[in-house]
Image 1 (cartoon, helix red, strand yellow):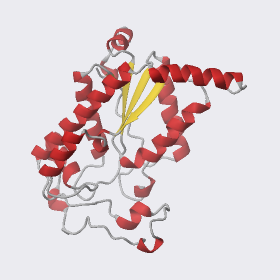
Image 2: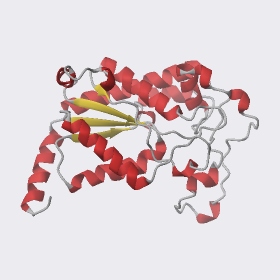
Image 3: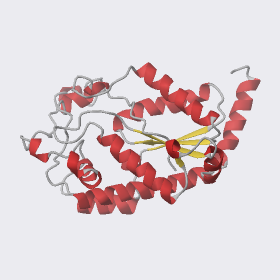
Length: 268
């Protein structure tokens, strides 16, 4: 069920059918090499969320494309909002989902650059009580072992941003948006390693140092068949996650216990 396709009168019944679970698919708008659309992450995560909700009932929140992408803010088309605003906005949206009657929110992350932002968001939720529980999954990087092994056997290259796997997904979902002919340099996605002297130390330029053109890997072997498998594998993983969230009784009890202890300590 898609949130914006449900009437106001029928939303309570939709929540009941979904066992109180809302999927919040979050991606971003960023450069994906010279050949993929800016909305690649959002196209993929939306498709995965919608297909999973058809197999295991859940209400899917509208596309949420305000993600963390400061490292590509200088590229045309990228939408990069201030990080404090990203956190406040996402938290406000989640509070609205809870106010509407959902008891469990499953954030479905489709963009690796959101990992730090979402990790901090989860930690910040302990600062005050909510009337909902929040869970997080990134299906792309949490595939079941059998699917991971099959993916490795099907792939001709390793990983990458806008590489073989991502390009294959868009070739499957929206082939008219892929422009492989715009990859002029076959080595454009190679890792530059411009900070090797730091010995693995972290700093804000880690990604930019290696992939300044926001293209990693090699997209040329991409094919729709691989993309179809990748989407299906993510859907299978997300369906399992939705079922686990619905069956989860331990976390609600921990939330109650934690909030009671915080209240006894005089905390909000």
